[in-house]
Image (tube, rainbow, N blue to C red; front, top):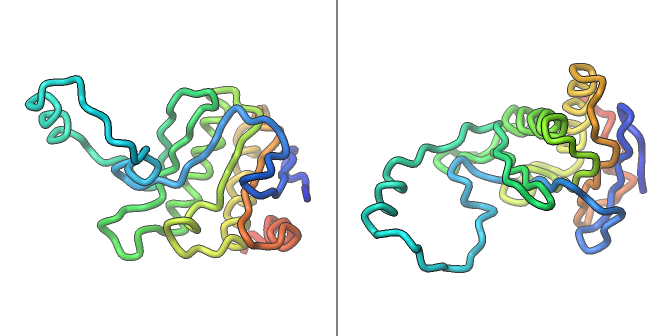
Length: 173
């Protein structure tokens, strides 16, 4: 199932059924960038004092921001959770992070992106509401940058109906 919004083809498909190759992937993240971290424990090559100093000096990321990690594919860590807050996410943070994802697509010349419904995996934002935020953010990004290189967006769905998600895409209310 697919639709076109603001010149971008949006394909709704399950995680195990990729509709096309991607050059960027978005991850739902918290301010400390812990949610998408690998769970494999590795031995640090650094001296324990140096490691602890880096931990002590670490600063949290701002909610609504995006941190870019090189790929391939390029990893876009969308900071939509503050685990010290209840609830841990807001629609404002999600919409801000979505807009920043599209800015990163311009900066890194990304043409095909994989995107899960932010706020749904580690929060309780309905996927249909996420789609409305996505539609509004994408339209704003294209209005601000008519040369947005993004051409295909793979919206990862769970048990939701793809048709229902696509209908929600233009519900900016």
